[in-house]
Image (cartoon, rainbow, N blue to C red; front, side, top):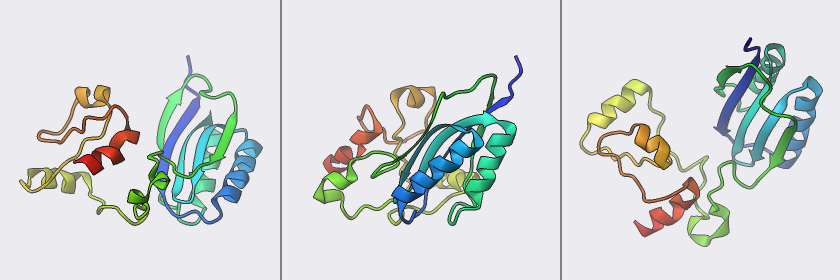
Length: 171
């Protein structure tokens, strides 16, 4: 079977002004070009998985790259033989990866747009792993961790990523 459908996966932490209106406008654009998928929009950024034919997905990537702050957004592209979604959803949420940070006073000062480490290239990351003072916290699920992990990585005893804030508080 020919693989003439592309699936785009992406996320980006970047400030989005008037994120609720951005989500509505984004939905209108996606529908106008016939894109299908699910996108979450928050004040802190965007997270999506969408699919369509080559022309449609290319139009979408060009559109996203034209938006302020999203010029460098990286898309993971997979090719499939059939459409991955039946409809198009764009939803405004408080967080693009739900951690419940807005739900408690302890985390009110945590902003993923501000509280972040420095980006490391693959080469820099490999070099950092050789440094005895480097700490790697592996927050992937059990299946992903069992497939492979970094030697010496700390593995929090959590079943899903939403449990991470409590694990950090406790440890």
